[in-house]
Amino acid sequence: MHDGTGSSAPVQDSAPYRVLAVGYDLVMAHVAYDAWAEYIEDLLDRFRPGARTILELGCGTGSLALELQPRGPFRYLATDREPQMIRVARRKAEHLGRSVLFDVADFTSFRVAEPVDAVLLLYDGLNYLLEPAPIRSMLACVHAALAPGGVFVFDQSTPANSINNADFFEDEGEQDGFRYVRRSAYDPEARLHTTTFEITIDGRTFVERHVQRAYTRAEMQALIDETPFEVVAAFDGFSDDEAHDDTERIHWVLRRREAAPAS
Image (cartoon, rainbow, N blue to C red; front, side, top):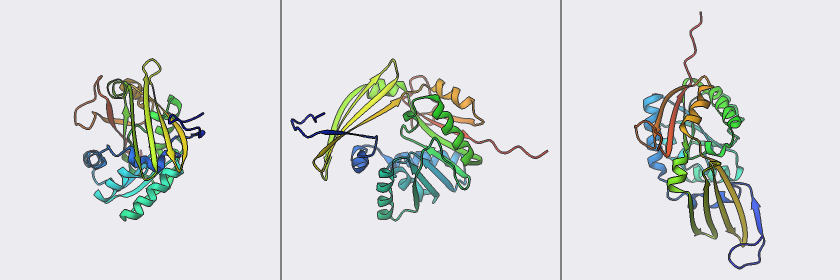
């Protein structure tokens, strides 16, 4: 395989985020993490007032964690399954002097030493789970990690988001020797959204293929209904309005029910 620049240099396949981690913040420069952190802080104030401990799943390079942690300030553990992402996040935390603990973990099979007040999984992390089984595993892990009354805040990208905004697009960027070309396409029948990154760094070219499934609200509601969670809210995007059929991004707030009083 060769790259698309006319070069004969071989192209190497890479697991998602393994190489992209180096330039992930460049790729995500359009995301207003400060506004996202403000929205999550508001949800926590409303639905888990007094929260002090947060576990973030699929944290990437830690941009949201580093914005949100000092707002509490919270005791904050942020995890990602890709070690390279965690390495970048730790460097950023050290540079900013933030008290966030970053660790490697798979959000479909994790345990915590002590229950937490809130668990977060944001920016399409859930959509990387392509079948119901790993979603069930993730929900079970989250439920076990929460203290009674704790909340799980997560988002999901819907078919409307892929159809309206990212059915097919291409962009590129370059900074400090890292160059990427991103191409995205959506299969509406399979409801699979595939994004391919062609990354050039240190004279070598890599390809990462990221596949996500676009779930409907009804599908997610059915999976939640199998769990002990209470659905507190399902919001349309970053608003206070209820999600609807044309919602592109849903923010769910689930609550672990308080323990029943002893008889």
